[in-house]
Length: 164
Image (cartoon, rainbow, N blue to C red):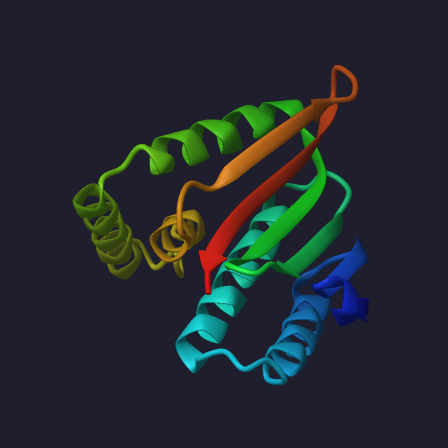
């Protein structure tokens, strides 16, 4: 994990990721964000989207390795997570992101409430709600880019912006 603040890269991580080191990465991100003159609300948004993106990588990645970047730009923060994902999972992930991106604010709120209600009934502990939260927090669409590699897997990047 490295910090290259002088290049506007707040955090760069590339390597194996699991639930255990996920907390270390988030702690490192919080450390760097606490040095920024941003509001707590903005810092919380960045951390939440970062956490949700990395959890999606853990869930969908076929190799449990990822690249994760938080970049500060003049008007926004750019959050990027990428990994190798099995092609059938890529199709599912892209369909979910496309569907979420087309929700109105009202539809998005309804879907989040539905997931929360189902979570209470089914005890699924928030499964499937991360991308919905990310879209609710992010400014603009969640972007997904796929680079086909072979018949089995692709390199996938998900990205969101949060205005400053």
